[in-house]
Image (cartoon, rainbow, N blue to C red):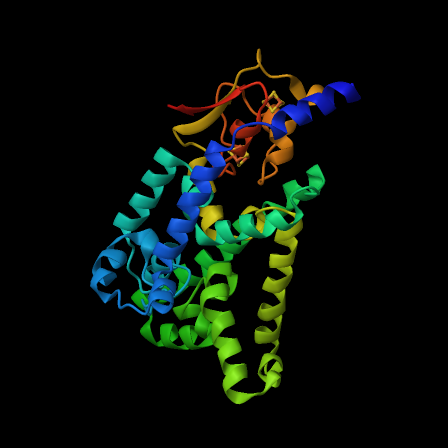
Length: 320
Ligand code: SF4
Ligand code: SF4
């Protein structure tokens, strides 16, 4: 048995890496396109010309957009609900994208996913996995976060419609949460807005005490540093357990037309192989999924690592 596993392991290491190369290329391009301010800084050019284009493409939400500096598309939707405006069109687009393309955005485009993939390179040989029960439990955290955000912001929208005086009071009680509902829950907002701003403040004032000025600042600062360290050991830990976009998208992606399928005749099975499950950054139990077509309960981000690494070519993409 050990001999079998060793030879399969060697086989999988020799597999061509065309999918990875394509994916990394797309991730790098997307990273700079979405955060085009970085291009402006590096090349000292003004990309204002593209501002209009970047604003109309939801996933390329402009980093200069005051409504949604870091968290983008989903923050915009939730913010509008808090303003008592239901953005049917954008929500419709989100559902359609999830049904047609599942979570390919997470696997190929999202800069936060790319950063976590990059971090996981540092521990490529010794990836850890949570126990099955712990994973099943943790996976619900992002849904709870999303639910809390939606309930709080929907109440704000309803208050605005029916009781303007209560709305003003409620909004002021919610504080920054009312204007930036995803702010504290978004690693994107942390990395591209919160962290640079706080470092800038520390440099300008020369006072590290800014970090300890209030509990929330202190907590957020170190909480996401811990998440980034965890991402070195547990690939995509933020996507799996905390990301509000992942929570929403997984609800629809579960029913996506785009799936994976496994050929049980070619597959060597869990005892002899299990390589697909070992390389899956989302810790999906691929061999327990329906072989005719699966999305891992909406958790599969279509990174295609399992397809690339399967020594027997047992996994394929399926549409429909
Ligand atoms: S699908 Fe491929 S990688 Fe996964 S157990 Fe079967 S043969 Fe191995
Ligand atoms: S099941 Fe395959 S494609 Fe989906 S996340 Fe896991 S490795 Fe990536």
